[in-house]
Image (cartoon, rainbow, N blue to C red):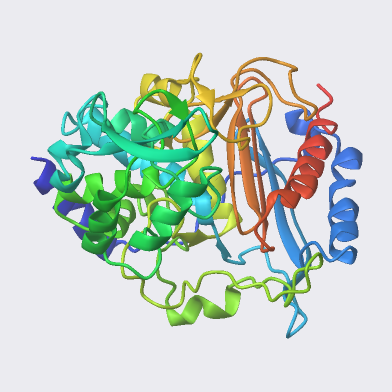
Length: 420
């Protein structure tokens, strides 16, 4: 029945091609926003452009399901001086992770996956993993040993980043960083089989379920989806998420006719003077990286987020049940401590998103229950159910923690515009 449903949906999309679809619009005042105060956003972003943070941006604010602010600033490509269009396409990096998380939860709803399933049920290469342990003797000499994992890594751990997997590029564990480099653990330039083989060679940084460390876990969740469905992650997402939501420009491999809309960063990093190089979405990837590989527009992403804000459905297309969305956007860390300072103060982590635990507790505005994430290439979003608010900012910039400056700036300017 599930296969027949998928075939019927595919046939419908052939007979009635998906076209670009905007969300409804409203004047700011109709949805409790101030037009004058929203007008502060573009000049602030323009100042960031003057400061060489990025060459251009697209900003969108949706309230009560309607677009109240949708503006562009700066350039699409600084080498051509082409102005930034509203339909510019951006490399999403880690804003790919929510797509993969939603796809995994769709399979959970269908009874094809349980969150507590060991990952080894689907990926035998990762059935038995060891954990790296650091010890220091009486003389102060440090050594490393491995011990068996106390329990298997679960799908649940992949979605909430408690698997013990890491990102080799910025884990604080120097020995794990070395081991990842030696085994070529990566999301770019490797096939799914090569990726799994490399992960099987390295130990976990933590016992599963004991620490939160932002990681390539979502890439492995993508491999689980592929094992369960028998198809590539990009195809599953295209058929089950992107097309139903009319996300017409979201892709892992950009068609040639779209390349002219691909936003580009500045040539060099303002802090180091080194060239800025973002991943190339115009070349077919060796694997569909569920943690970082997609590209898309602000409108596409806003439609995805509005689906979540609506409790799992948009315009008659239901992807998830309301209680599943609530489960995903609840804190799943509790007393589990972060092993690295990626989570801002006052936030836990759900199944694919950072989740605000309470009003306050952070210098940036927001409400309890708000969920968000961003991408290393300069993109960010959040959904505030209490305020019925969806916000998206798309730029292309040098990856790094300094991006928090313009992302928080956008956030505070959005909240100050709420007047009801």
